[in-house]
Picture 1 (tube, one colour):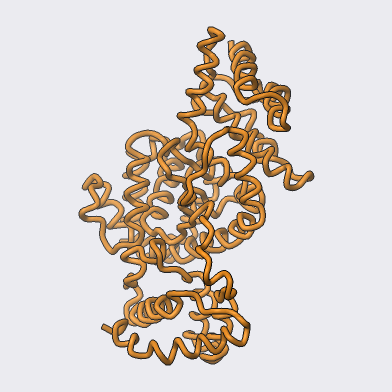
Picture 2 (cartoon, rainbow, N blue to C red):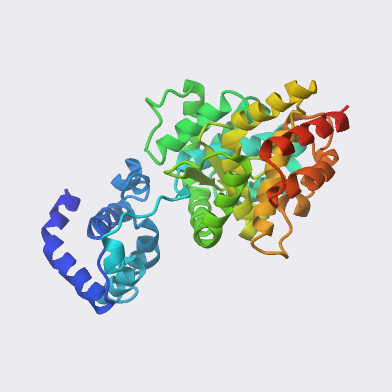
Length: 421
């Protein structure tokens, strides 16, 4: 009701925005004033009822066409909190979002990635997942991407009531004895991740098709997570997005051109949706191949700066897993050898790392910086370090322009098979 009432001010607000844009020689982007209404009306009601989920969030509008959430959070919200004047806030908002006359007449370029930072249920699921693995004492619970979760939880629990502590502990135990015993790539985990990403920040999970027991666990834990963790995790997600988006804007097109040429496979015209979560799994990111589902942790130190940029390219390349394995298998059949199960993953680590290293000669690729080569990737029985010299010797020259992709794949699969025996 208040939202629709605020539309009666459209002419006055549009005029004020246009005046600020004209002073800059630019134009007001479409939907800015509408986004301001969604944000302001939602913020007004949330200040009456902190548990309220604004309409734009509940319906997922910020990620399905309505834009400007980040500048509204950074510029308009402080004004609503009493900082600065309305005209100062409008001027800053226009300066941040206005577009040139020429750009206003051109369609926006297709994004390489679209970021989703405010998916409440997905973030709740992941913190329960990693805490469950810690409680279950799985070997990967000490990895850098998740090791801080139990300490963060212990600190937050001090500010909860006894009943809240008990409900939270029950939720963690439910995961520790159930979903946390699976990897994030085992069924039904990918389907759960996709469903919770679609749920965004809806008030309840009824009607999502999730297991009723899981729905009960998540809904009971939700008010506690929203109170104790969510604001900090959401802020971390948004901060991480801003830093990585700057790198995507600067280096994205060059990097994607490099990896698509190397693999001879296309990047989707609409880009990949990137779901940002405080925690994810021990690796700090995951992506079921071909599922169009990329999930990256904003909290782990391993995902910061160019390493974070490399890891989102890495996870996107997993969408090609099926095609890459088929190409390798074709060469393996011709040579009467087998494709080591970790070879495609090792190729991604090497190729994404090499792509970013070519942007900055001082850059240390992710797999080298965090000793990934000593790990057993993709369920392999041997460490990936046996493949690194082969990638240096065979794949790197191909990336530099020598030979064809199929020649490189044939040589790689032949040597990798021998090294895996």
